[in-house]
Image (cartoon, rainbow, N blue to C red; front, side, top):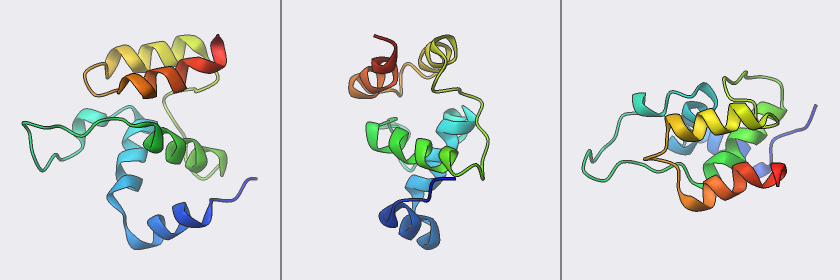
Amino acid sequence: MPLLEPTTLKMLFNGDPKIKRAMGVLKDRWQDIDDDNPFMPNQITPELIGIAKQLLATGMVKARVDFNDYQSVQAFILHNNSYVTAESKQLLLSPFE
């Protein structure tokens, strides 16, 4: 079982909002995350995807999205299209190219 990177572990212990957002990615519940500014919603960035993948790799959390399955990744992108950055889409789809 892989361990979390030290920076991610520190974020977890400190209650960093990025952990909550990464869990939102894993649960495919991004729209439920409280936005401080509804006019500028939070984006799903490559950093958040990386954190989400780290959390998932530990085996301590489960995900609704399977990052190893094209259909699952595509459905996630379509469901969250207005929040997923172009860089994140590229990162998510790159294993399937």
